[in-house]
Length: 232
Ligand code: URA
Image 1 (cartoon, rainbow, N blue to C red):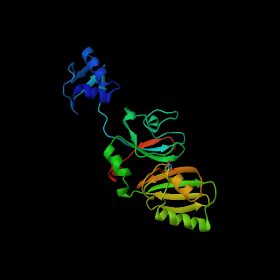
Image 2 (cartoon, protein in one colour):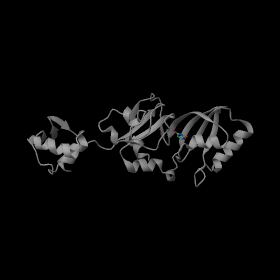
Image 3 (tube, rainbow, N blue to C red):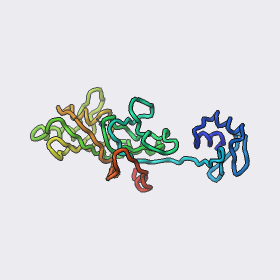
Image 4 (cartoon, rainbow, N blue to C red):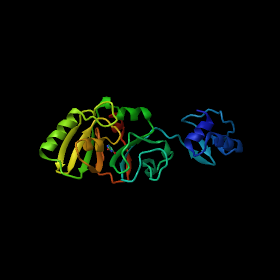
């Protein structure tokens, strides 16, 4: 890759600031000051900027325990973003794999590998996403039986062209449901419960396919293992 691109990938410098740094003689490759931005460098090149060694950031795959009040978005808003919780170089290159609402807690995946992200979210792969759903009112008896059936058959949500894919509903307590979805439409869990007359007061994602939060504390993240990455 060109040296100016290498600099913009590994530092905060834009391509044009990288060219200026090169022009000033701030950059060395394998011990020699290099000023030409078109110089080709590779994995094995030892590049330094103001004597600091630089290394390319590879593809990253992270699992975050999202707290409430954090947004899954790239643009800055009133709330902190999921990527703001990740203290890695070039964290702004990471994207969340799908989204959780700002008030939803739980498992969020982050990556800079767009193809992997697509595989995780594609309904074709039928990866169950398990949500713990706290309802304002108990859901029991006949109403529960109707909701289980409706969710299994698919619910036509306002503004959608197709019904939701078959989903599995079970109650853990009269007001705490476990819902497994195989897709991710906007506010899907809240809209599905609204469709059967129930209001969601808290929502937490526990797992996506084989990946679960385990005992990862809220606000913390960890890297996925090679095996976990390969599972998708
Ligand atoms: N469904 C919702 O309604 N909200 C989420 O954050 C995730 C799924």
